[in-house]
Length: 118
Image (cartoon, rainbow, N blue to C red; front, side, top):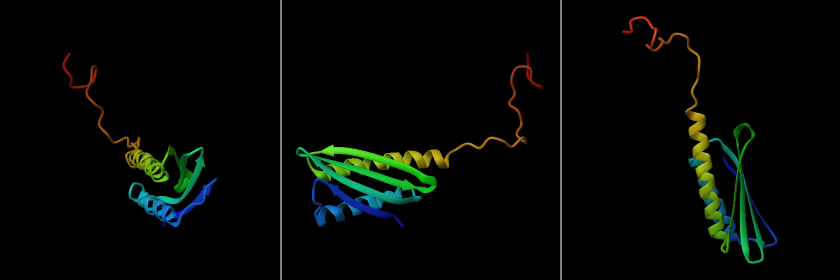
């Protein structure tokens, strides 16, 4: 189960924004099932809204996305999209690692190998 924490710096968060943020980040488990927690921090600075999401997965793996926009919802959407890309890439790398070893493979035929023509 994904534990989500939402907070705001220099601004008060509405319940609508908190629930929207929780709804969007709860979908991150679709991209990598080992996600454990997400911390969402909204910040407002001179009319610009910043959104930072820190996602923690197994083995102390962290993923961070920071986005800025005039609208806090748009900043959140952009940060979630960035995290989706990061999590998908990590999952592909993790699942598709090549394991070396296994000495029972036959060597490839090449120059100087038995049975090859000169």
